[in-house]
Length: 294
Image 1 (cartoon, rainbow, N blue to C red):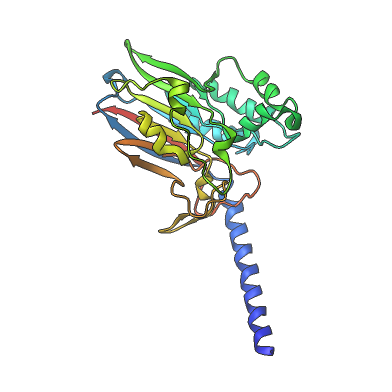
Image 2 (image 1 turned 90 degrees about the horizontal axis):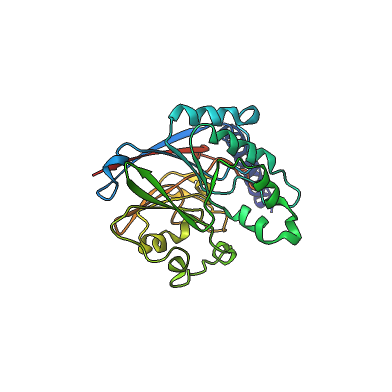
């Protein structure tokens, strides 16, 4: 009996110590920024887009790096991007939460380079469930600079020297953000939004949820930018991210560069967290991508 109590006491101490260590590391990492660089080569990338530089930001969740996010803004400006892609969850989708801080950050980014914004699940829920979130989404939109390009289930063209790249902002539906179980994407869903893909053009998707990467690629998206998973919060060597916001342990898509059928997805580890604020071996991330004609 005494032996069992001693073992339980030791285990309890070890658990408390581990939690304390994780909390200290997490507090330190949550306030640092890392830049991850990628090069994407494709024969479909027009020669006029050789060296085209994209910065991706995702999942800010109202987190501040320095006063008024000056550290984040300075870090992005230093990269000298041609465009900035923001793949959702800049706000925290909880009733009564502030939206001005995220809007101010977006507006500051727009002074650096053209900003293209697509929804995350937090923006999505505030835009749909107005009985719960009142006018949060409308306030956010009102405070955004008119210079910011909103791509809400929409397509635009990036043009250089009369050559173009297709850029899409995908919202998804609440059913495609369900926790625990992955809801299959309905056949023809992407066709219904964007029509049939032209295989002779280069297509970039901004799609917050990476779980449907294979659907995006099958439609024809050559390069997808995603977020949502926060890098799996706690990253374990050789195993990857431990937990996604959709309550998937060791999710297939957690952070980094992924390939499927010759198409690619860059999955940002995000900048902030909203409920569980743990980050271990997983610094807040600015993604920097250079396109090259192959």
